[in-house]
Length: 173
Image (cartoon, rainbow, N blue to C red; front, side, top):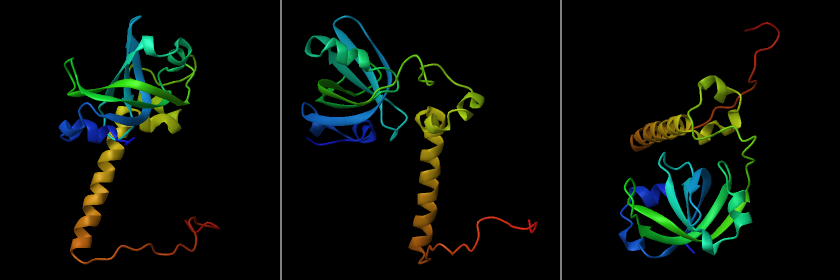
């Protein structure tokens, strides 16, 4: 089964993949639904937009679905189809779900609501999962890549100079 990044599925022309079984992995942003169907917003950090996963609850165990909460890390095998709803071009109809890591909804700090920068300072290890920091990381990557590409095309070399010491000592600073 072919693994795809969410960025590829949402930004590229994926008409050749429609009605094929694919694999996606990421973190649950939100889960909503009713007693028949659940909708999971999945994000892998490759793009700010979430991929919608449609889960027919009759095909999955209730215990498995209870363990899928905001912040959980999951993998989905499913069929990529054109979306019936507005807002996205494609969605995945889940056929198999693997939970790689659970997130306790009582203690997991990131929820659907917006968070202040002061709050995010306290949870540095989860900051890249937020839209703001994810966008900043992607922009910094693109800018650094563009600079390196420019100088590489102009026949410059990129090298790391050796560091004798990374900190000042004995009052030199």
